[in-house]
Length: 159
Image (tube, rainbow, N blue to C red; front, side):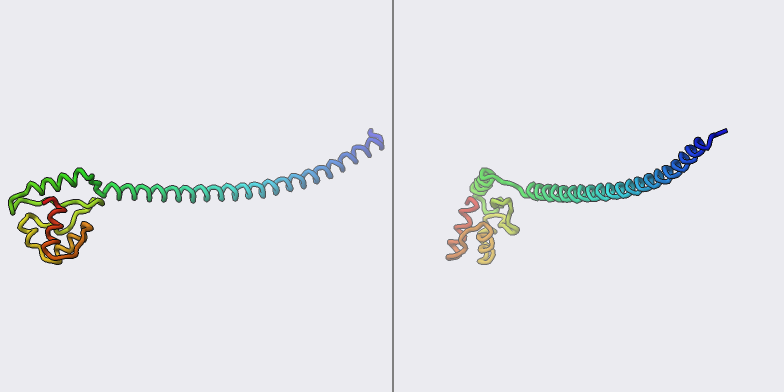
């Protein structure tokens, strides 16, 4: 059968195998734990990056929305040229009849006054407060005698 030397060698290999198996098991467990920690770290890094990307996207989206809103507001403001305003002046200038319609003169920012005389008769009937409001609206001097302020407004609207 086996010699005692062979038996000792086999027994020693078996014991070494048990020790190697135990050592291999410990190494495997340590590697698994290290992999789990590494996986958790990677997950945290990815989660942080995803949150940052979402935050950046939200900021970009907010900027786009603000830019679009500004463009919409600009588009809602009529942009009238001097030629268009001059055309309204000329149409008012051609109005010789006291009841012929007057055209509201547009300011540079595209706004029209809320109250504007419908015709020459209504223009002549403006009281001091109504005249002052229109002169201020157009950025004209609102001081002086009523007759001069009235003439100033009439000249401005093309009469």
